[in-house]
Amino acid sequence: MKRACLLLGALLIGLVPSAPAVAKAAEPEVVVIGTGGTITGVAKDRAAFEDYDGSALPIADIVAGLRPELDAVAQVSTAEGPEQTAMTDYYDLARQVDRALAGADAVVVTAGTKSMEELAYFLDLTVRSPKPVVVTGSMRPSNVFGADGPANLYNSVVLAASARTRCFGTVVSLNNEILAAREATKTNTLRLDAFQAREQGTLGTVDGSRIRLLRAPARFQTCGKGAWRTPFDLSRIGRNTLPRTEIVASYPDAGGDALTAFADAGAKGIVVAGDPSPAEVAALPGVLGKGVTVVAAARTGSGAVYDSHGPGILPAEDLLPQKARILLLLTLATTREPEDVATRFARYGVPQFTS
Image 1 (tube, rainbow, N blue to C red):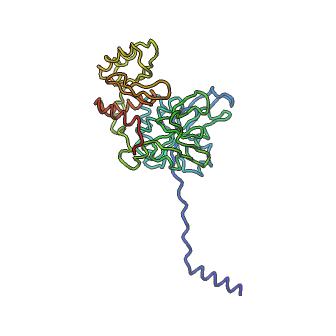
Image 2 (cartoon, rainbow, N blue to C red):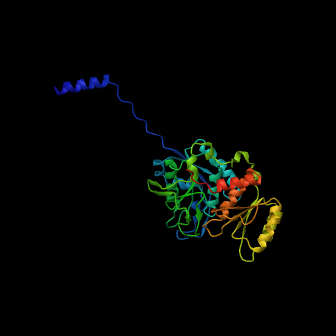
Image 3 (tube, rainbow, N blue to C red):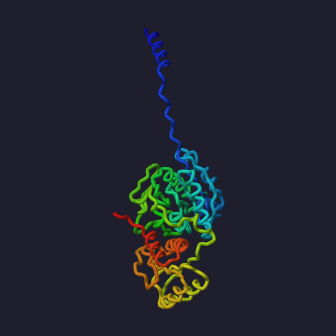
């Protein structure tokens, strides 16, 4: 009887079509673009935390050291990008990121931390795709004790592959924290927790496979709409036409010569960091008369500048001077009409949630 039942079962199995196999969902495609920096640096020995050859390795070598763990998260490919030594490098990288996102699901950019906050903000304002863009790096070179690069890169790929930050614009991911590009700033030259968002705070954290998002940038509210994209479309801006913009520090007895010299040298925009000194105030009418746009920013690292310090001067509110310069450069690359400049600077410099 048992043998007969087995035979009958075999016949029935042959007659009843089996359920189709469920195809495994393809892992998301993440492109890691390396632009040098400490994360690809090599120290002379494992204790030489500050004595190393920066940008010594290709990013492919760093990624290779993280397999097979990365393979369990995403299909990761690598590409080399420009090191950030000029604004044209920022321009080229932003165009490269958009080209990569035309086929991939997300991009992770590895970069040096010295100017990472400016790089991330430039990408945030110019990349056209709403797909995730994550910028990361490290405070220690690749081969020293406690190198933070591998963990930062792994967490960034996990975050990018999750698509949780779609429509967030560019974010910065280091030390297990997620920061908005607009607010991220380097606050220490040595410590692993060098990047902070100060008053605004982090967007969330990456703890292994656990991604916690506690808030979103204001532009998220326009996700899926044309308004999500800024007017800073690099396909409409010539690579070699980015206007010269400068930063002038203010301090007791600061002279106005720097403002005048920059204006005479062809600067189209100047950010004044701190309350202008009497000599700087005296120089401003002549600078404005040459068609230079002047922005007043705080030099304290937090807080805001709401007053314009005089007619024709734009307040940066809580944008740091180095961030205000990036926004001013891109604004002047798209319009020179004073009213349009003021409107654009205010709208994209201080995006807010609306009811």
